[in-house]
Length: 202
Image 1: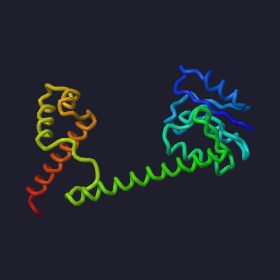
Image 2 (image 1 turned 90 degrees about the vertical axis):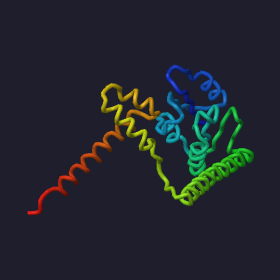
Image 3 (image 1 turned 90 degrees about the horizontal axis):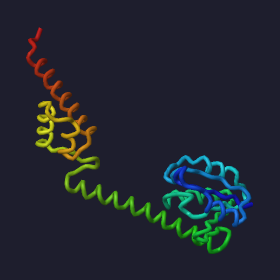
Image 4 (image 1 turned 135 degrees about the horizontal axis):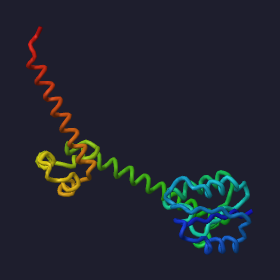
């Protein structure tokens, strides 16, 4: 049995082109989603995958209807293969029931693995280079000490809005508020330390 799946990104788009192609291809059951392909939760896709059985063929009009990334596609296709369900994409003319389709599946899987390995290697190399230069991993400071002092002065002057200060410094309001809160806490801790230091010993 051929099980079709169609997806559009918004409710304003229509399914006509995909539904016509899937019906012409012989799909007896077609599931639909009107949601971005980047979203992990897609009700229609989940229902289609649950409905398909071993020996069936899962059909999409085009590969990007199924997923937005190579990793996402490979994960879905691996799941289908494990359940002995074939996969077919009409536009790209991919059919894992054929020898050529199986070859494509294995090649794309190899490329996905290569991409993951390259990302890991680049990350490790970057961290190693940073350690050699005495830096540790993590987010860099957004503001220098001078910029922070200027931001605090503007903020305390009550003549500039938080939005305008953040814009001048090229940071978000949330980041600026975080620095202000940190500075207040630091000042409070310093005052408490001085108070304790000046207290007479009983």
